[in-house]
Length: 242
Length: 307
Image 1 (cartoon, rainbow over the protein chains, first blue to last red):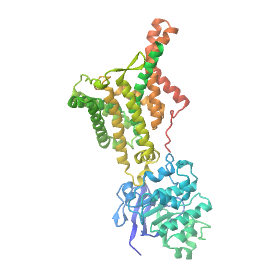
Image 2 (image 1 turned 90 degrees about the horizontal axis):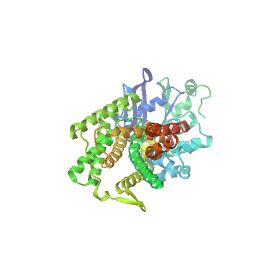
Image 3 (image 1 turned 120 degrees about the vertical axis):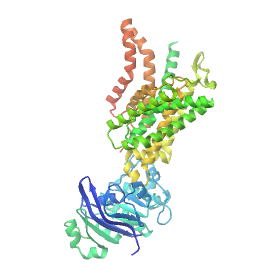
Image 4 (image 1 turned 180 degrees about the vertical axis):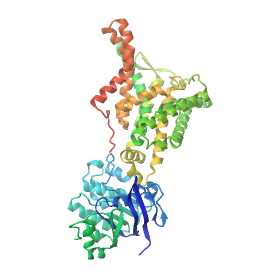
């Protein structure tokens, strides 16, 4: 295993007085894909928000490429090489597709060749067709493509997706998963939250299951597939990898 | 003769309108993006006028005076944002009103200390001190036409800045979702300082251009601040297009109302009654306009799209 690109070690996080994360442990190796699994409200989004400096943490440390990032403001964390595709996509509704991609673009340190408009349009030809449309005129799937493209344009080493395919049509889900596989093949590390265990098992190298702000299980895809009772217990009936 | 008077007053209204636009653009951006109510915006207008008067004294060139006033006030605005306003964004609007009202008192007193309580006067630049015949036999001051031209040009430039540049995209993106802008690696604090400095520079441009037609004195920023607040409410808070439309509307309604309403009332009321009611009604006209606009479109003429 190569050295961790991202390392969360013993981190607590709070919303006001209520604790949302308890001694969270998580590591993402360079160029690898990691899944964050758990029911709603178990701390997946909080983990991501803590990582990006959007929720204050106490105790422990978050390191990116060996450097502490857990006291930095969000924009410095993002600039270190983390590209966020947030829950609900959060496309800028009053900007065109092209402007959404360009506004926050920065040829920082991308794994592999720099991300340009043409390269994003190559990955998602649909966005080229829609480039003059406003952000709020897109379908959910197009918004997700745009959110991924927007994050790639910041030149990330780690792409973080919160609910990668939630609410999307099956065809669109397949396209998002194949795009993520392609990005992983190009050397971008991926941290992904989703409910589709089968797709996660195919894409990801390691899986972390969260339960009430604790990491209760972690292992590789083979271990996840070999232990169907684990997702069954933490995710409920029917949650078996297919 | 009446059409000539109407034309002249319409141009006066337009000139007040573009001045109001220069003020309103900054105020509406700061409110729309930073969610900050900045009552001290009028004091920045005053700062622009004083700096222009001072710079004119040093350089003897009106153009240099305007340039120095704009640059100096933008720098002053950035300093105020960094030193005083940064901590206020998360506070509620009442705290912001109190703090920026304090800034008004501070800046007015600072102007009085530095330049004294007496009004300063700046001459109209010699090249524009003549009149231009807008129609045969209808003269109009060239300087006021120049103000209209500068205001329209700045409005065009501002439109291009907001619509076409990266900074403009970030300003719009920041207005709809500042957390996401920060999470994508943009220093929102720096963006806010830049927007505030831009607004201060525009207010200073209005103040510097007003210096030759008004007297430069402490407190000169407050009357125009009131008008500007009316403009951004009418136009739709956060919208530059709304600021432009609202500024022209309010500028024309105010000017034309003051010019014609008393004489129109004389046609229907007794002379003594119209003499009493006319000016009062004329100065209420912009507020009546605001009430009508808000009744028809509660979010203003061009409600900004802020997610």
